[in-house]
Image (cartoon, rainbow, N blue to C red; front, side, top):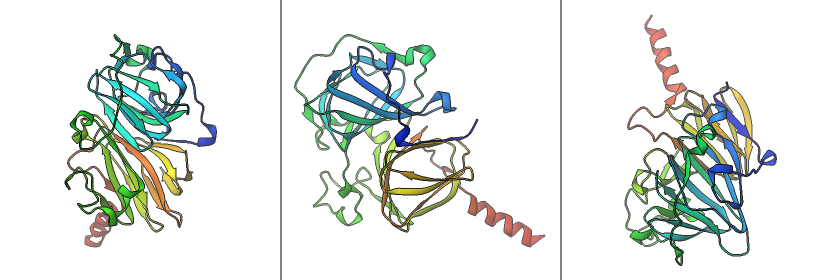
Length: 297
């Protein structure tokens, strides 16, 4: 079985999620990658909710992270009921009761990571529970501890020149840090600081000359292109990934990325979470060692 998956936006198939969303009305999901593809830690896809749609209150035996792509939706949990809009994200820990419902007259869509993957042979690891009280939703506010499991990201958050304390909503810290290197900008979204324990979700932006050489990880990654296009390789095969495409690299899959002369941005997930050391194995570094060894012979 291949150690990677590439799924094109034009081939997306949105289906009834079945037991994954009990009591669902107006809910469909495109599973970009899951257990059937050989993934051990990643079930990544896009969920759509039609106007008037909803799910019943339920819990999962997996961790759920999400990022709103378009529209707005209400998410009720046992901790808070929030109105989510495009750019909002969050994490629903294992066993936390929650329900989705439409907000307004437009459809909503969000990307989601389930880790470990939902297993259809076990009822998608989902259980219907008593309904939560119907309360008025509040907006996601990074300074409000009641919405501490959620956040928001915009294009401005990816701009290194817009990171001064005066422009940040909260005090400058690792929570607000922006990582910039090799023409690459990375902004963490869902991680252990937000309450996740099994996976992470973050935004990646490449400048026109940005690139990452061939490497692999002791974890799985999924990618959803949200702007522009990027030249990618997975185990030696070349692809041009464009807006709406989903890709996945399993453990040991050697992959690389290079911008094509314009800015590109994508949502990325990792599962399990990155280890403290040796998260990247770059081919060029070990090739360097081989060259040194050969010189010494």
